[in-house]
Amino acid sequence: MIHTSVDINQYIREPATDPDFPDAPLGWSRAEAQEIARNENLTLTDAHWETIRALQRYYARHDDGTPVNLRELHDALDEHFHAQGGLKYLYTLFPGGPIAQSCRLAGLKAPFIASDRSFGSVA
Image (cartoon, rainbow, N blue to C red; front, side, top):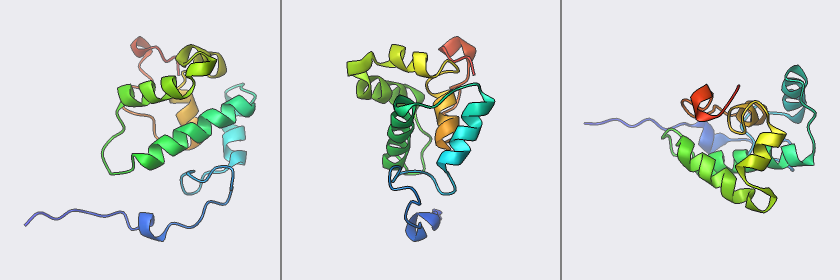
């Protein structure tokens, strides 16, 4: 008999404390993101917050227990921000890497090898 585990937190999740970030992980706050940004010499603008919101939405939609695929996340962000220039635009916002650095700010675990310098991230 195979046992599968279920994260009970998904069933008893409290409503988000920040209505602007409905998909934020439990325990995440804007203040925490601002503190991380300050430590990384980054000033958060509306564009940064939109990226954080997009990441949190992506992770919430793909919360089935399987690891987040870096290439799929990469492509989703590129598509979401296509009108602004895609990933090139995101690199201007997040010099530490649009996935590694923005995941830290969003309170999310970056996919495996997202901080590998050979992949393009400098975080």
